[in-house]
Image (cartoon, rainbow, N blue to C red):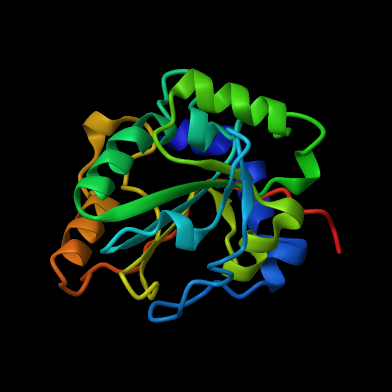
Length: 209
């Protein structure tokens, strides 16, 4: 993983510079920001966190089309290949999932609506993939990276935030399944013991303010 991190160190470092650095990420115990904010899904429908919430909660994943931490590079898988299994696991535990693209500064390029539709089709996403205009949701959450994970319980109270697991390189190398465990414990009404981990990924590409 070390060589991979050096390859994309620049995009990761940007997560903690400029406007993104001034944003405060929501804390465990906070309510979900903008739960009724409707965003355009790749199928043309309008979707909000409230819309996708299951009886046990909601999972919000900030993601994009090109970040190596999401899509992989070389021998590195990236986390995107694990999305559908997590979406299915969350659904089986009464938790709905929303994939959010907040890369507003790249909306005329790699993260355009058309490219998002293509990505969702190619990867056969099992959850809505929505456009976060002006990075409004990302700013409300204080989301920094792609991916950046936020898990809420049935009251839309934040119970976990951070990374999916401890190995972007390969699913076979994962030792700590942070999100999987958090989903399971949330569905059981139990406290998430590891409720916060460091998000690792490329910066969300906001328009400078």
